[in-house]
Amino acid sequence: MGMMWFIFSEVMFFAAFFGALFYARQLVVPWLGGDGTKFFTNVFLWHGYQGGWPTNGPAALGPRADGSYETVSPIGLPAINTAILLTSGLTITIAHHALLTNHRTRLKLFLAATFLLGFTFVGLQAYEYHEAYTELGLQLGTGIYGSTFFMLTGFHGLHVTVGAIMLTVVWWRVMKGHFTPQRHFAFEAVAWYWHFVDVVWLGLFVFVYWL
Image (cartoon, rainbow, N blue to C red; front, side, top):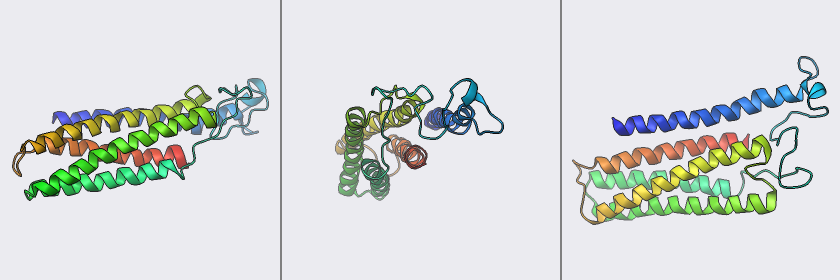
């Protein structure tokens, strides 16, 4: 029950961040930009501002003098990271089945593959952040787009890091001969968490990178 409530609290945490993204994109930005009929805030507050997404806001915040920046394309590292996480979801499922059927060698190999894929994901995301900061002009302070992008992806990256560490600990316990087909809740709890991380990333990939 404790693990279930923990994951539920994490679901609500991400729901709050996704809600902030929705609020900014669907309500705040159109309100600031105006639509020529109902809203006139672009005339009275930010003359000439055209609401659209992605945006760094009417003040055009960012590290560059003109406030310009480039978005991160979903084609490339984000797509590769999506494939990595989906594959890790498959490998931990195979490892779980191997544990239930007491195939210890298969369990060790696929569990190791899972946490290695997790750390690979984190490494590629760090590289993506470096490229965004140095090449694209996209930073945490680049208006509402920059703050929501880095907050959502960064918080998820923290969860992947924690999950990969937990998987490493479970793998070490497997190597020590722990867990049986009847008694292995530590493994199963970490598997729940890892599947949760996978599902959240799919939402991030669609709503942050694609749309």
